[in-house]
Image 1 (tube, rainbow, N blue to C red):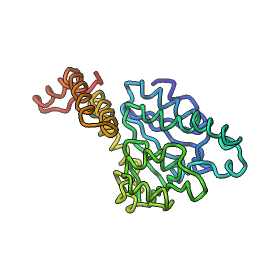
Image 2: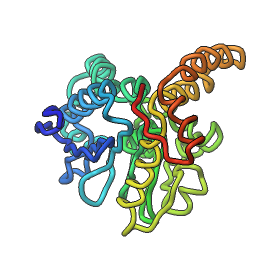
Image 3: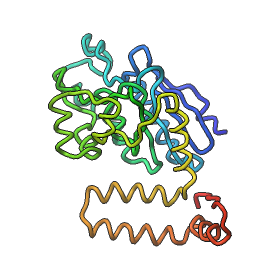
Image 4: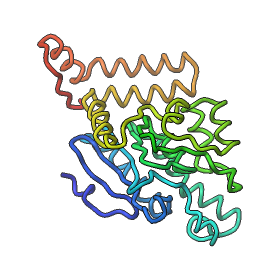
Length: 272
């Protein structure tokens, strides 16, 4: 096993499970509030894993009862950590600090799942929205609560939330600061999967395994094409898809899949 994943990183924990990498936000005393150390660790691990062909899916979750409470309110009150300094210093720290998370995640080729245990509030909600899929339970909570404490989603939430639920619903979340829990969150479009609390880890692992069992190159290209198609016009999308299809139709995995269909067996993809 790669020793990179067995090292200790500030405010996150790592676990390899076959082709899966599980990243646990590990600041439970502050409900996994985001710190500068967590930002650095998280982005470093994501970038490394994305270049590791043995990792086919990444899962992010939170230690303890909650996924992530967003910013550390105590640090805000005391103007410490990422909240110290005056306006220009804060602006630069956002750009070179927490905003590195959305930029890193948006650049990932590897599929990413948010296993949302408990509350995902503020920047925690935005982090979940940055992921490709979200799975939670009846106690999972989402909230764009920034305006309730006189702030805005400086981590890119205005981009990611409306990509997930649409403009109107994202505006509702942003202006009201309401909390969406369980079935209401699922109906609102904030979760792809709602499962029993006792089955959250097992169902997430089942979902991750299903994704990891598909052809890795095709998965990565399909994800990239989905994101680009969302932002551009039809012709741009078609041109990209033609290029990607030209690549995937000559991969070893594609021919392995054809042989598997012919032999009535499960394909064994190598990511080549």
